[in-house]
Image (tube, rainbow, N blue to C red):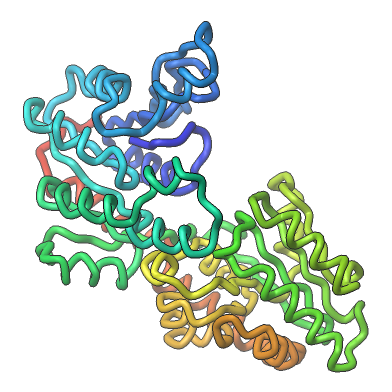
Length: 396
């Protein structure tokens, strides 16, 4: 179950493909705000979207697609999706629809796995701190309401998948049994870049960030750090920062770049094609994760850190707990003080040395080959599902 439109989400697709490869029949149940066909096959798994309401006003389309656990459109679609299945397992991506799954499971003999990709009480709390919310957002994204709802549904699920150790430890502190939690992280397959990694030469820094552009991502800190770096006496053409994505902070970042007069050094691209992103990744020699330290980031992990590591480029990050722990464990990058552009600039100076970048990048690449890869995580996922039920398997 995925509360957004599909395609596309990298984690949802990885889970679906992994279970298909393990000979399970897989259906992705997704929102249908884009009014796409209700049924679709990827060739590997099935996609079943919520019914279309093309004749209705857009407001009603949004209402019928809204991911409330008691929304009858969601409940109807889930029931139709598991109709005829023997001992189905319902994997729910994120918190809002968990109770819908557990309610259905009570009378359909289904098992429920909660994929806690984001810790919603922490995410809502952090978002409220750094964004201007409307009265409606304050109601539907209340951290306290999310915390109560989460506490009520956790005992009702059969298993919870956490993204990272810090998220798992939070669940254990809440009383969730250790044997009911498994870490399945956001790691890449080892062959994502065809086992090629960056070879570092020269002192010109080429920094990349790809993702959403929001206040929580701390990209303004990276832009300001670039200005600090240039003020130290380095030419503008000795550092190139490419920021790729869309989000509420895009205009602010563009305005900052213009105000600081560093347009030669920083480019805010907006959204690019996958080929263009791949080209930027190939040319980059540093990967940026200058996130603001908060409860949200301290309980999840961005897949970008592992992509940077696999590409053989060092990670430039702030003191976010899971990211800092992985960097310290693997020696794959440098950690900067939170909210301190001057400190980020000092780390940029350190990363000018190609030998330093090569050593850090090699450590990151080896860590992905040996530990932080999807081949390892998907085995944990398959073990969770296989332990939950005696599911009818497809013939080998």
